[in-house]
Length: 63
Image (cartoon, rainbow, N blue to C red; front, side):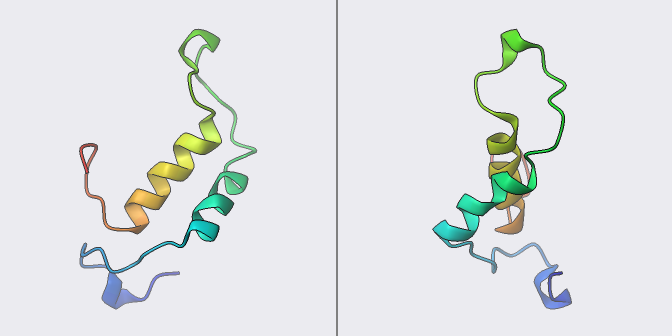
């Protein structure tokens, strides 16, 4: 749960390497809806990177 002061979109939260490495485990049970032809990267890794970016303040795909 983030502190309400951190909800302004500014990148105040920084994840350590240890925290970032633990994120894929949270997404390990998510079923992968992609076809096998389109799977270049494991879904838990993709979701972990996206979640880490959002937690650090990213506001869009290019961020």
